[in-house]
Every structure is written in C-alpha cells, then in structure tokens.
Image 1 (tube, rainbow, N blue to C red):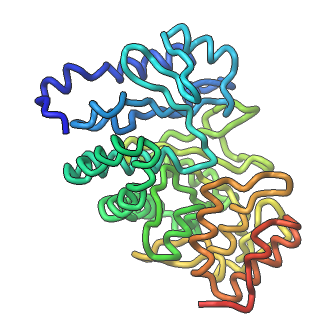
Image 2 (image 1 turned 60 degrees about the vertical axis):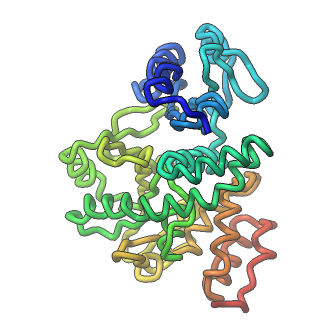
Length: 356
C-alpha cells in the first residue's frame, strides 16, 4: 500500500470537480432541459479515486451521455478538453480516465458499491490492491464484486426504498416498487446495488402526485420529443415515465415513476393491456411492508420485446430469481412470454411443474 500522507494524496489528485464542470460545459447538461443530447449523469469512481489506492490506477469519470452512442460533435468536444481515445475509454493527460457507461449492465452501480467497500475497509482495499497488481483491474473487480454487494446490502440495504415509501405514504394509493428493487423485496434481501428505483404509480392520479412531490421539493422531468421538459400532467400514452430527483435521496440517481393503468382493481401490462393481474396478486409486500410488483410481472418487463436483446443485468436478475418463483409464477411468466415474446430464451428455462 502507498504510504503517502492524506495531504500528499490530496495534492497529487487531479481536480475532478473542475473536470466535471468543464465536461458539462463542453458537452451540454441534458438536465438543463430542451436538449436532445448532453451529459445525463456523471460520477467519480474507479479504484484510483479511493484514498490509498491512487498508486494503482488513475481516477475515473463514469459518464452517461445522451444519445446512448457518442456522436461526432461529442467526440470533438472531448478532444477540445484534452481527452484522447484509449481503447474503449478516453484518457486525459492531466491524470484521469473517462468511461462511457453501458446502461445494459449494472457496471456503474457495481463500481460505486466497490468504491464504498474499498473506502470503508482498509483490509479489503489492501487485498484488492494485491489482486489488481497480480491479475489486473478486471480480475480484481470480479473477485470483489460479491463482497462489495454484501457491504452495500449491510450499509444501504432497503434504506432508500423506505425513504421513498415514507414520502409516498400520505397518498394512500396502490403504488409499488418495480424493476430490480421489486425482485430484491421478493427475495427479502438486496442482491445488487440499484442506482435507480422504479416505482409504479396510478396513471389517473398524476395531478395529485405532481402536487405532492413538488411540495416536497422534488425535480420532475418527462421526455417530450426526446427532450427533457418539466412534467406537466397529464402525460398520455405512449409516454409513461417521469424522472424524479431529490438531493436528500443519495445513492440513487433518480426515481423512475412509471405511470400505469391500475383502474378497476387490475394491474395492466403496459406493453399489452390484455395481460392483467388482480391488484391483490400483482401487489405484494416485502420487508418493512414495502409494496412491490410480483416477480413474474417484473420479469416480464425485463424480458424485453420481440427483436430486442436481453440486457445483461436483466439476464442475471432472471437467473437469480427463478429459483424463488413458485410453479404458478413460473407458469404465468412462461405463458405470457409465449404470447408476447415467442421464442424468448427464458421460455425453455421456465418449468411450471417446479416450485419452492
């Protein structure tokens, strides 16, 4: 381990906050609204950003850009800031690396959890450094992924979900968590870090929801014609997403509020309203009575649509959750996949005759 003092470490660190400011200025900040491109989210990461590990590697900026694939003007803007292509990443000679995040994986959230572990646990940091020096960055990240997830589950766990539930409690509506958080609530444990929280809310209660969240100081955006605009209810189909941000909800980039038809006591699958479940079946309750979308319905979303590849994080979620599904849940999901995504690879892996 490097024996430099805290003051020496700080003196040798590049000014990454200035780098963030310059990056948004050159590429544009998508959150400024009325833009079709720009920086959607950026955070400092990598082992080189951890105190005591700067001798292993340079720190990184993990960046989400809109659109998802970097454009020629964006490349020119990076080069104007001194960045140069370095394999799949961009290197700045002032001492850091820019990594464009692949949203089909959970890499950024995994990296954030890893940095938290290495920062909190000097022994883990020393062991990580040994693996890094011997086998390289990718191997070290892989070896410590599970340990970082355990640390995240112990230190963060369902805290953010509980904060959201407390915020929504006065509404007394049949809202529920969806996505990866729903699957974790079904298992009863956090199985991976979540940088976004998906929340299903009734489509027909938009004005009340907006008023409630604005009163609590939330920023609310909706994509209109590929541009962020302040959310103005009603948002009608096919639009269904409202992005909500609050400075007090740390460790989470945003809430993805998913406007859903929950009328007449039924949950309706947004991609095919003929697929339904009674709300008392669709809405389950996990630890601390946190409501969540039943896992077979959550996995139906994660299966994607005809012609779309399965995201790596969704495939991992399916593998992790399938043993926790009852025979009835597996049968329901298999039947709906056969109807909505015929030929989906999960169909062969679902066995309606097996259960817990």
